[in-house]
Amino acid sequence: MDMIDTKRFIAAMTMAVLTLAGCGKSAPVAVESVSLDKTQVTLEKGASQALVATVLPANAADKSMSWSSSDEGVVTVDQEGTLTGIAYGKATVTVTTTDGELTASCDVTVKATLAAVDLGLSVKWASYNVGASGPEEYGDYFAWGETDVKSVYDKPSYTMTENINTLTSGCDVAAVRMGGSWRMPTDAEWSKLRSECDWQWTTVDGVDGYKVSGTVEGYTDNWIFLPAAGYKKDSSLEEAGTSGRYWSSGLCTLDKSKSYYTTFTSSGRSGNRCDRFLGLTVRAVTE
Image 1: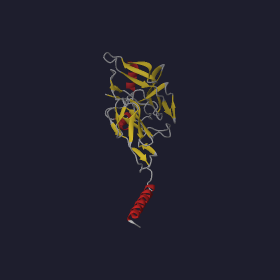
Image 2 (image 1 turned 90 degrees about the vertical axis):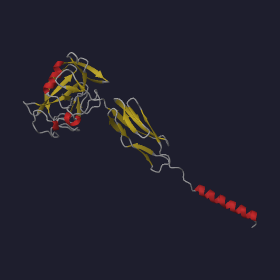
Image 3 (image 1 turned 30 degrees about the horizontal axis):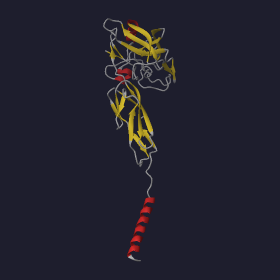
Image 4 (image 1 turned 90 degrees about the horizontal axis):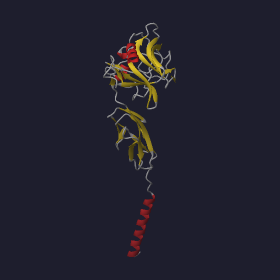
């Protein structure tokens, strides 16, 4: 083999090796899914919380992604997935992969600022219910003297067996859930709210209930909204949208199986007593 043939042979072999090497390369691994560590988040205004996105498979070639908010007036999100509450409301935050444009979403609620509203009475009233994020939300339902939300409200599941004339802080759900000086109103404080304030049946953001305004000079521009949240019996929500039932902290002394509450419909309001095991809403007060 002469010099020229030798060079041609080497060149041919080199090409063959390169060709074989190229055939052995695998295609880039594509993204198959993306998920978030949370699908629902509740934030205070001004508070921040990070979401964690997971892209699969772990060896995907391009795991880059982008973040967006459906309403940046409510919540913003940076490109690291950190949420920041801007104003009361609800919005959806979505992460989208660059490869395949796959998405995952998280529903975000930014809570309204809790205010102690002075209606010119002996106590100030919370601007929304215990467990709610804003004035028009029903919030959570509680059996009298219990502080946990339950799926069933009936006598067998009722755990508050003590007969306490007025609930103490350890079993006062407003004190436990909201802290500070918040507590459940007494029956007398509810009576003053019913008799000494102006009650107007109205609708706030599609929710029926009462706008309760102060009548004392200097307080007539102050008001709270009490949604007609109904009540819970067994596992059912009863009368939502047509009536409200709100616990007081007082035990019925005539029948200790019952406690005092305030009830209302569009036609009026009154104080009453009912079985302690039922699930009612709670509106807190503070001095």
